Length: 223
Length: 223
DNA sequence: ACCTGAACACCGTTCAAGT
DNA sequence: ACCTGAACACCGTTCAAGT
Image (cartoon, rainbow over all chains, first blue to last red; front, side, top):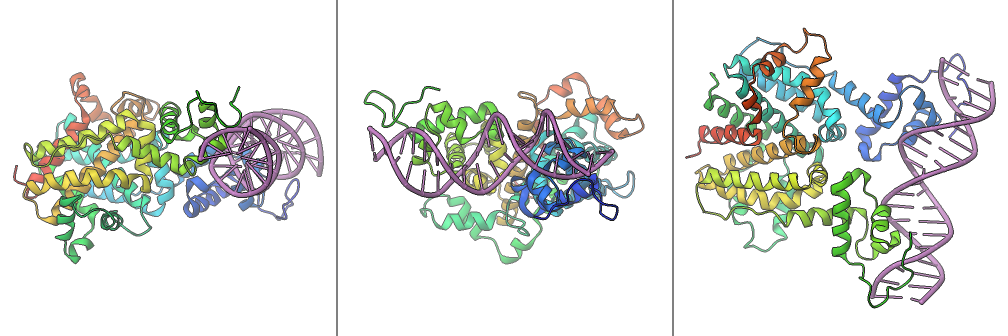
């Protein structure tokens, strides 16, 4: 607990927005937003809790800074390059990649309206461009883009909530199923029992996109 | 702050799991899970904070109880009645209705893995049944059901996060757009500018379901 | 300018004590 | 059996003070 006292000496690193956010991101990645606190962050930086307030005006600002930091790394597809369905897939994969890289922050990002709007503008711009190229009229573009974003959020949340690296909630649900009376959930038991090993290995994220893209074509998109 | 002291007298209402959960649900509905605390709940019940622990083992248990309370009110469609796409729609609407009724709790329910599994089993049973009736093979059923659930979660979250009663995040994003340089987000500006008033009034939730159901038919479902 | 330290108004929960 | 009250180890943040 040996803290520096007063103004730091010449050789020491100064406290910086950058340094604070980098440390905060590591703490959130490791322990989640729940376990993250200004006091823990200060201890991690070897600094008095109040020192942080000189660079960022509060906890909300720190979390908003983290969202900005992470969203800046989104690599969205360039407009007009390649086929539109591939561009939609590229947007979806980029957004999902962000969530996979920082699942704990993602839960905050997605559930918090304010935080979400930061990423939403960029992501929707890319989606609108791709869907316009599909020849959809304006109202259909908005609906299709909403569907894609909502799907990514829902999928990402399930992924971020489950054990790290597990891409489906089904193993957990199946475990619960065994503890319940056999006559309950017949459709669930029948379908899950009919799955083969290689069915489970397929990437469920891409499978959802397949259905969405097929649906967009069916309601008027030109493939 | 006049609290009853010691054992309640004969005429007084005893503290009950039911009474506690009912009060907790009201507090969460009003102030959100963030502002909810055991101490506030106790004050609301006119009781010492520790009295609650005799009926529920902690804060997590109270929140889990709320999720159970709310999920018990889900009215899912009966198996085998009507056309399968209508059953899928009925499941989606029931689940969404739950979120509309308790948006603050829904954010917790959806973002928290443990809480979500409670509702997930029931909802997926109904979805699997409907999708099996569509003639899909087992792996396709799982993927389609995942898509529907993820969509509902994503949509519901956006709805629960935004101002009450507002079914789309677009008004908020458009407001942000005006503050930014004109050359940014061209596709967003073009498409949103091309919307007419009645386009904005259409229910975006059903529009997303339209695309999903069309996609399910396209990948092999028999309508 | 940049950081500290005490203080305030909160948390969830344990544990011993009251009736 | 059911509830209380003090206590512990935490929070975010304000404000006055140090260097």
